[in-house]
Image (cartoon, rainbow, N blue to C red; front, top):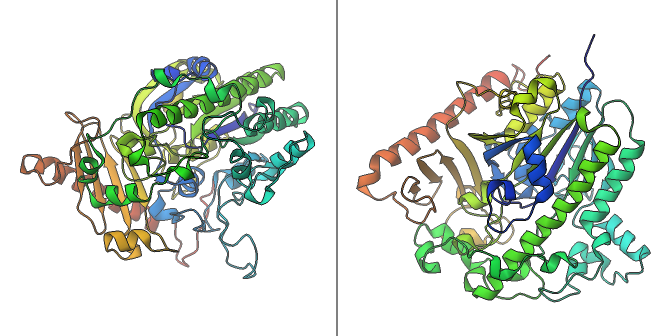
Amino acid sequence: MTRRRPNILLITVDQWRGDLLGAAGHPFARTPHLDAFAAEATRFASHYCQAYPCGPARAGLVTGLYAHKHRSIGNGVPLDARHPTLFTELRRAGYRPTLFGYTDTTLDPRGKPDLDPDNGDYENVCPGMAVDTLLTERATPWLAHLKRKGHAVATPDLGRAGIFAERAFGAPAAFAKQDSETAFLTDRFLDWLTVASTTPFCAHLSFIAPHPPFAAAAPYHAAIDPADVAMPVRGARPEVEAAQNPLVGALMDGMEMAAFAPGLRGCSRDADEDTIRRVRAIYAGLALEVDHHLGRVFQGLRDSGRWDETIVVFTADHGEQLFDHWMLGKAGYFDQSAHIPLLIRDPRPEANLGRGRTVTAFTESIDLMPTLLACAGLHAPRNCDGASLLPFLNGGTPTDWRDEVHWSFDFRDIRNKRMERLLGLPSEWCNLQVVRTERLKYVHFAGLPPVLFDLSDDPLELRNRAADSAASRLLLEGLDRLQTWRQRHEERTLTGFLSRDGILHRDPD
């Protein structure tokens, strides 16, 4: 007898750091529902995205490809329509992947009219998805909900940013907690769940919190006491941190706090201690709000009898600096931007040994595509860079698993050429590639000096050892690892992804 295919629920949050879980020992995270979920799931403690910001991060997650192969390297850079996605592939098994939220996908413009408004818009929908609720930064359905509740919505063209701008920094948002974006999207998903087909479903629930603006409805705006918040990890002064590499100083110069919280002014490096603590507290409060509504999602699955029929994934697109290394947002090469959470609850009997387990081996966002396809009884496309996590879910550890992780960051400014002018680089040289192991972190640039951290005695990434002759062997190891990795993955592209006619072809099951 053929076993019923599992339901699949992929939950993503935006800009959620890998350490922001009570289960991970974070000093001021309050995530009781996720902590309870982690006790029934497999937690991947060393999980990293492969690019940022949002568009590139999610492109890697849904294609299983490193950024130098999918080439959607910035928000607004199209994702080639020839790349299979997690959702186009799941349709081959009979799923109808349904979206609640957003995927931050820039669609391939080839074949579209020049004036098509989708061209260059990074808030389109990933190929393969059906849409129940599209909630982008334009936030149209949420604004309509607020208007029905009596809110004026005075600046609808500003989307969600206009609503948050109505209140000063630190004040409760202008809407009630039951009307927040997170609450609204959860309500829509739970309504759908009550009428969803009894055949196996696939849903992607994509929350924007705790992405900026760092503002929340009462009581979440004040749920975390700023006095309890730890100060950030950073060098003694901004100029000390900037001395690591010219990129760090250039990023600091343009990191305006107004882009992160309503009413704040100045650069992140100039924030005083009170502002830092309050921002970090509100960020944790937004996470607490998401955690509350995830508790509702988990209970909804139980109430519908689907809890033990559903593979539930909780992860993020990328992290957040949160004033670590004097910066905000996702930028540069520090772990805070790339380290993200991953929790997977697999209800299948063979996964009993994996539940409640913490995996410390390095895992990557690109591993989710082959993992979920394997759960659906499908093979990943031949060109897929990720590897299935099923052995870990089943309680084992593969003998040939990776001992390093990789990610990239493209910092060009095509429109204004700001970074190009500051760094004296052509646009195509404005990129970096990171390779990280337990011992070392090596950052290679196309046009800037390298960065090397010896993590055995500098886990906080404060001292660049690239020019230190005493660390020359570590530097050579980092460069060798990076070159070997790149060559191996380019070879996979040539042998497994392109046919003789140069067209992308799907690997048969």
